[in-house]
Amino acid sequence: MLATCLSSRYKSSASDARGPNMSQVDLLDNDSVFQLKGNMLAITVLELSRNDLSRLDRQLAQKVAQAPNFFHDTPLILSLDKLDEDDEALDLGALLDLCRRHGLRTLALRARRPLDIRAANDFDLPVLPPSNGTGRERALELREREPLKAEPAPEQEKPVEPTINPTKVITAPVRGGMQLYAPGGDLVVLSSVSPGAELLADGNIHVYGPMRGRALAGVKGDTKARIFCQQLTAELVSIAGQYKVAEDLRRHPQWGNPVQISLSGDVLNITRL
Image 1: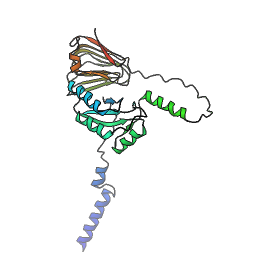
Image 2: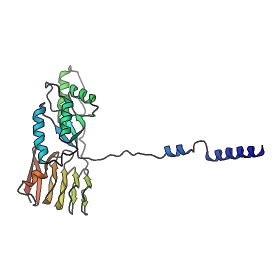
Image 3: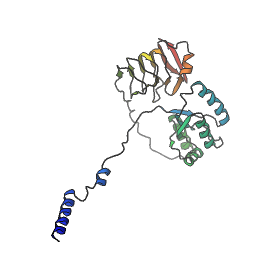
Image 4: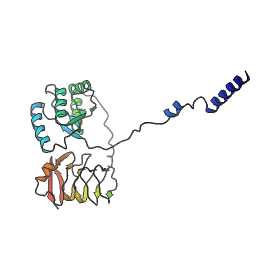
């Protein structure tokens, strides 16, 4: 009887010492198993201007044949906001299958037509807002259709000055698999860039060694951004979303030379330094 009381008292004391909320399960619950982080990724946008899937299939096959490695499991955003309101409904399922056959993995849809948005919801695809120009045009169209209302004149706001960050300078070689990003400014690399490495900048990109990886300047839409490199042997160069891959670049007479790359309209111009 005495042993039983002592045993019971010992267990009670041990339980009190641990406390009611200090079990092993509770401790594990307090140990976080995830983190939410922002990241800057280069995503390809397929902007569809006509609802003609057969022509898209042929033209996309030709493009993929030029750079099969670039189009292998490439993350993609489908942009449908350039389609006319009067066009017939798009077969989104067939379009997704077509992209998948060519190695493009659709992550989201950019659309403004209600029928395209409903189709995206059916396939459980996120819907992004239209591009800036299309969105403004759409807003004007809706405003013209609404009855005129007397509205006070909006106050003129002072335009927001763009944020300009200091130039990001890299002195060490950029190895394959590395990704460097210069937000709000230029990126300068004083050494070589290996195949598989990726350079991104909101402004210009300068490479003072062999450029064998990818260089994407003006990633937020700056069409005045430029790329400068001492030796053009890149896998891909891009300015404001317009790009050329190695198969296109090798045919250019300035391949292997020091060049500057600029954008004129939708055309990348490559000239020798």
